[in-house]
Length: 191
Image (cartoon, rainbow, N blue to C red; front, side, top):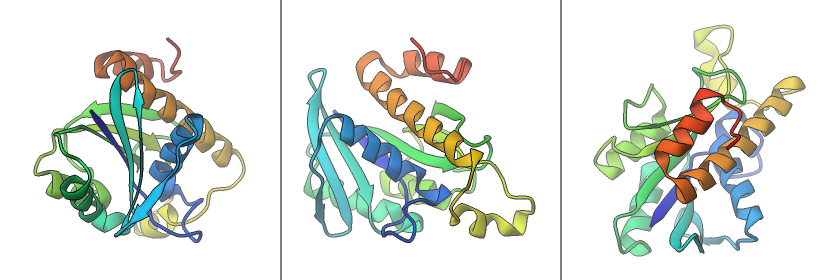
């Protein structure tokens, strides 16, 4: 069983911001399978079967820094087995649109990831990181991640979101190692 968690902030105000890459990747993934999203108590979720595996998609609506609260609610109310947790989120350390997959590691200062780690009780989960680049000055990080990109950066992020969606499917269908080999080395996502 897989639980795919996209990180972001709820509401139209944040929908197209850099920080909401995780939500958009899950939305694209859900569109491919014509999934219906359900909302309850600070979460939005969908489910179906892919390659014989139950797969859940989860968007915590508790705002980025409290993403773990939505995860906890889902795990206690909707998830009856221990899933393979895969978290999709933005990453300042990569150029816009570049994706990287890894298991475990630190949060890199990402508050949403920190919240997920606290709720999960471990850093042992898969991350699909979508690069958003860095602002010119460190003190501008909050404004940068909560702003809407423009021009070429939008095109790069859309391509990165598509690759991340393909990476999720590869993780489920062919395994983490294959996905890492395919998407981390070339970055192209071709198989």
